[in-house]
Length: 268
Ligand code: PGA
Image (tube, rainbow, N blue to C red):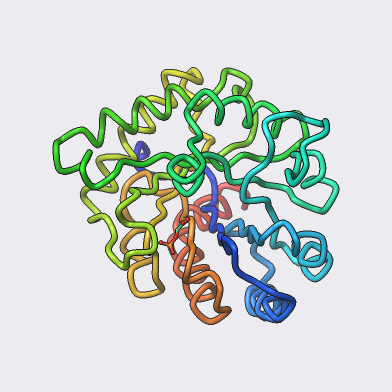
């Protein structure tokens, strides 16, 4: 059914979090070599710590891999010691930015309203926001997961996103960095709910991919990517090693194959 087929090629995003010295650039170069095929699918991005962004963008220049930030400041400019603005990320080569990650919602007290303002600033700087939402284990256990995530989607995504490139990442908080991931059924249920919200909020637009994140591994990637409405994955730990990240990219390329062949047939 067309309803369950993502409209665009999948998006695979690596979130290096607070990891990565200069040696990590070798891993990125290896990922670029291993994924240098003539097909543009899937889209790939790596989000390193801000300290590596400029160098990583340089290393990946000429490859199809985008770079991105892991957060940005809510103001476009100003005297904010220690902060990085969306514009500075863009100048350092970023094309995407992760916003509203649970590390920031939980660890730095970011709420939906703040995330929405950051998204607007990111859009102004020409960045594609990847907006994270997800429930805690206690919320899932008490049957509130759908409600919480729907509320986060409604509260975090500003009207300014209409017509813009963006992605939503469903990352159950309890699955992040734990080795325990959501089941395909739960992922499909949540992704359908998010798609419904997006369709209502943005007048039926089907272009924004909905990613899954939380303990994605090469072993689990194919099943996750085959679930309805899964438009890609946001990968933490497994994105740090070239071998595991490349295996996940290959799973996404495989998942994109039917859509790619349909497009090719339509063209010929
Ligand atoms: P993980 O992290 O893949 O290590 O669980 C995902 C994330 O935090 O985005």
